[in-house]
Structure formats: structure tokens, C-alpha cells
Image 1 (cartoon, helix red, strand yellow):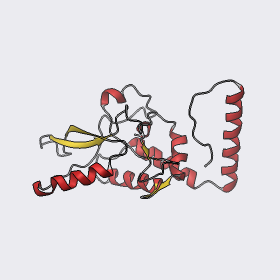
Image 2 (cartoon, rainbow, N blue to C red):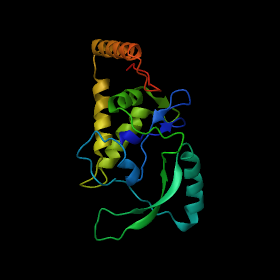
Image 3 (cartoon, rainbow, N blue to C red):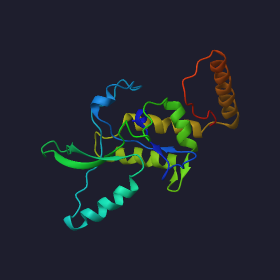
Image 4 (cartoon, rainbow, N blue to C red):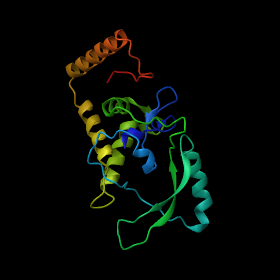
Length: 195
């Protein structure tokens, strides 16, 4: 779901160079976005955890601190992969579009480049992406996320470029920026173009 990547200034990035993480968003908002994956599934895979009653306050206090940067508490139905089981109501942390940390739609390749170079106190942003991709694949036989998989593939392609390919990509990005500036087009905030 790379088109809905919140900033991550406290775990996989820094205040000066925020990383990116994924979030859940309402289907009604998702439908207003341009999706570069025409065959995107109409569901999101995840895991639900039942917390012992005696640990609920402790766990929520921990999560409230961990997820404070850009997320809001919401309650949503969760349907187990076993379709014979009923849905359950779950507390989730969601990055809402009105939150200042919410980035909204982003170019997938520019996002991959940004993730590839972002690091924070909890580690490299690419580690988060690759671990998320693997975890989503392991949830069930139909699980996975096309957006996350595509983004991870883009990062892997960037990481396998030769030094000469990296120079050419940077030169092409600089030329594109010069042409954009000369034509008087300015789309607002732009990310760095280096790999």
C-alpha cells in the first residue's frame, strides 16, 4: 500500500530524514487514490492478537507510545482467514489522512529510493519493508500484498544496480529536474533524487 505511506521519524527514520511505513486506510478514501496496481485485492491481510485481560492496559500503554507518531486508535472488523469463523472487532492504529505524518499518494519508484536510504533508531527502512513483505506472505495461503511486494522488488532492483547505473540514474533525475524548473512547473515538495 505504498500510496499511503506515513512518515516515520521515530523508528525507521529520523526527524531530518523520515522513513516510510504502511498504514491501513478506509476503503472510501482508498477509492479516491490512483492505484498503480490494476489487480489490487479488495482485502488487506494482517494478524489479530487476543491480549489477556490482566495485560490489556500494559500492552495498550506500550502500543500508545510506540504508535504515537502518526497513528490514531480506530476499531474495525477483522475476518479470520477461516471463513467459518465470525468477524471480531479489533483495536487498530491507523494513519488517518488528516494526520500531518500521512504522506498520501507517492510515486512508487521515488518511494523505493527513499526507503532504500532511510535509517532510524529501530534500523534500516528496507529491513522493515522486507520483514513486512515476508510476514504478509506467511499469514495464509492467499495472503500477501501486491503493493508491498512491488515496492520491495523496486528496492531490490535499486540495491543491485552497478555504480555506473547509479550515476546514470542520478544524472537523468538532475536533467529532469532542470527541465521541470525551466518549464515553470512546480508540483510542490520534492524528495531528493539520489539513490
